[in-house]
Length: 227
Length: 275
Image 1 (tube, helix red, strand yellow):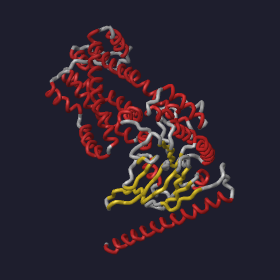
Image 2 (tube, chains in turn green, cyan):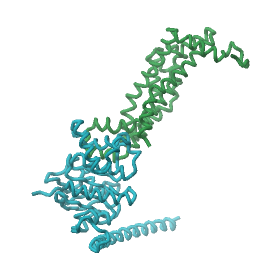
Image 3 (spheres, one colour):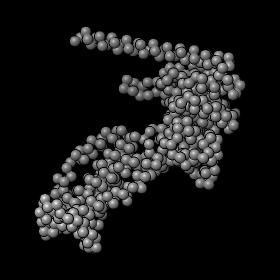
Image 4 (cartoon, chains in turn red, purple):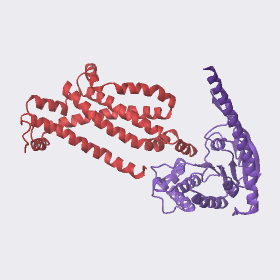
């Protein structure tokens, strides 16, 4: 089905892209590429989470630490991630490690800031409750801080998944790191525009599926108790 | 036989740019087991700080707080607390909140479930165990707060303005219930409040504090029959005498503020004269 505004050699029919995508779902090569991108993305986000969670909680609860660290983090977050790509590839080489590193870099900032905000918002009296009932350090983290920041934590993760897809695709396209990005640029170079669009569509669909699968339940749980 | 709780020359100072600022000065009083004490004083006088120190959440700059003869150096399993803000964990259900203190004490699950049920019944919330705090009214939230404090079977329950964030009708019912719980459990209660009627209604002993820095202005024993009748002449008499004491304090505070304002005003006119 076509409207006939753009020539078919430049933009395939939507139905054609969907059809190609449907066929590609049985193409092991294609699936591997998508899975590779997803792993780069998720790997980076996990690295960022492990770094951001303790730092953000610390910054959110100790104002002295916050005033030292947060301006530095702001500077880091203001750096253009895409411009860092070539430098990173130069250091690490054009492989999946570079993709994970850049994904971790861009995922760190939204998570740091949302979790820090969440920690600051925990009412002081809840810490008093924890103290009065003799809650140890680890349990204070597990039973108070973690559930209290969970809404912001999930917001941060969601934002991260959103931002980071772009950056992972960018490194794959421009530096030839294996993944769905390089698959798209390969298809364009080979003149198979329909295949390229099918892959782009796949990324969009996957982003929605990830969002629903990973965050749907969390969202329902949070809605149950949050004002 | 030692007192249940004893404050000896408790002082609290805060370090400020201009030097240390005394907030609490030389406060001493002692409570017997099962007594209901109310601490009243002008707002901002440091009543809540005093209570935090009794809970082991804060330490006196000098002086000592003793519980059953032993110095309080940190939170004590037999000292529990109720907060003005309710301070419930929003992600825990009513039952989960009441259970909280028991978890930290390592009490097995089956036992916890039983105590939770018992104390929820005591505060009139049986059947509400699976609701979340956001589904409750202020009065119900405070009932959860009280059940949570009782569940750990403490000897002393500290209440920081526990009825101040609740609408008056609900607060009145809750006060009556707390009076009943006090009579039934024979635990020691310490309530910090700025509501004098509330203090006379509940207390065996009222500790009147002065304006900042807080000193003990007077300790009054309230020897009225329970349940207390607010229209009774004795009730009114006690209320009046505390009110008179606090009014003096209020006047000193106001006078101090005036002096401060006058000096600020003088500074301002100096600046104007210079320019």
